[in-house]
Amino acid sequence: MQKSEIDPKILEQVRKLEEKYEAMGQDLASYLDGLLYSDYTTYWDYIHLDTLLSLQTPKTGLEDEMVFIIYHQHSELFFKLILWELEQIGRNEDLTEAFFIQKIERVNRIFKQLADSFSIMIEGLDKEQFLKFRTALLPASGFQSAQYRLIEMTSTSLNNLIDAEERPSFKDEEDLEELLKHIYWKRAALELSSGKKTLTLQQFEEKYTEFFISRAKAYKHKNIEAIFNDKFSKENHQLVDLLKEFDYLANVYWPLTHYKSAVKHLHKDESDIAATGGTNWQKYLPPRFQKVIFFPELWSEAEKKEWGKSWVLKEALGKKD
Image 1: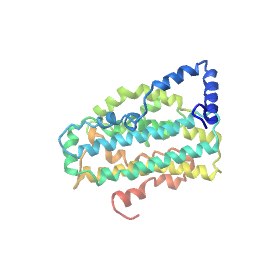
Image 2: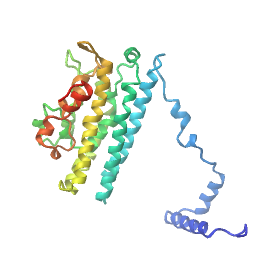
Image 3: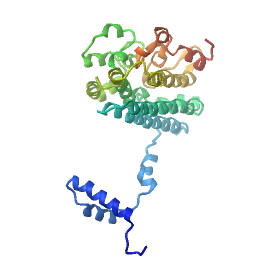
Image 4: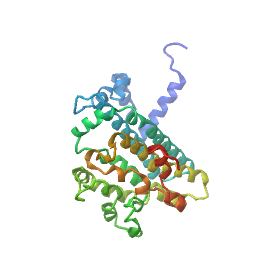
């Protein structure tokens, strides 16, 4: 082939590009001019590596605070990825079983990685350093992860997220704003002595309440539970098994790996140390207290009654059933 000749494959690609830009009323030649002047993409520019590595700003000189910061940033990125997958289900107008399965499988894979990686916090964080630098973080708390709340609200009905003791009285509640006032995690951020809202909760509500209300309304009929009940059958064992795995990973495995870390770093002799922000981790993290279940209709009454109990006994407390 002479240099003046153009590969037919390239010509075909140019033809396709011309069709694409014509459909949008655009001039392909202008875009090709831009391509001539644009620079090559580098790895560090593409992922904004320098910016990413500049986002760790410890508040103390204690070395293990860096472990704490990076792990939480890592978790938030994975939360974003989980939401990225779940939201694709919610906005898909031609949802197929294959697409639904693919997305839930991805979500489950991410949650497994999240839970397995918690050993970085459990075994890779010096307890004495943590107990020192944590006081410099107040009133900030992982409790204030808005993305995790969005995962919950994208996955299930708000009725399933009501505080366990109040849940029966809200069975037919339609007012989403009222439901949000009684969501389970709010009780975890009340002062143990007075019952008043901690500053951690006040800040969180001030920043995100309106956003959460908007999200709850948008996903009332397109959360994962609602979509499954509307479009699929409980007789589809593959889907049921995937959703039950999702439920267990999100509401048992993930919070209890967090609980295991709290037991190691915040439990001392007969007294418990409050978590950062003053949240009551002893009541907030164990699933057997909150019984947050995204798909309660897929579990037996016995399974719901014992929700998370065996994991706590075996993994967190080292006891047998």
